[in-house]
Length: 197
Image 1: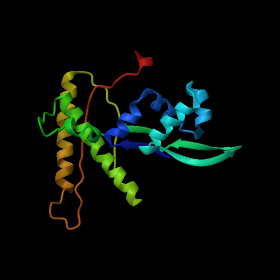
Image 2: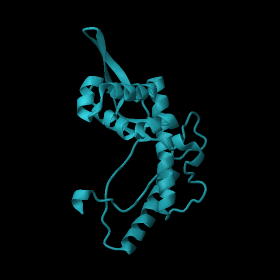
Image 3: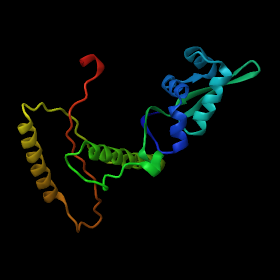
């Protein structure tokens, strides 16, 4: 089971967003059968089985083992990932395009960039899994507390200068066999969890 998987297909996204199927996916972090899941989610075994087959058809759950119980074969299933991210590719006709209105200070442009990041990294992860290879990535996540809007603006300016300098230092347009990498640097207000309010 993967830690995170990307859903790129619209029908698979629709299947995962059904409230009951979403509950089943969460429960199937640990292997389970329709019978064991029926008790957990309060639904008849036959209905659970129907939802499991739908999830299986879309690659969201997989068969772990089959057990004979009298005249019945019990299928034990498990989610293919502990969590899922829906790629903007699933909404191809309306997915955000950051090229439409680039604005470094716009939250909506940042959202479009984040959607592009999910789409691109999702495609890389899917391709790498099929090729049984790893994807070379790097990320930094942190928080900074600014004393004022002026400090935030100064930070953004200095960050821009540092990143531009690094790109100038390492970018080699003529490198034979070189591979381009996308880089996104974002700064936004932290979103506090319910317990912190």
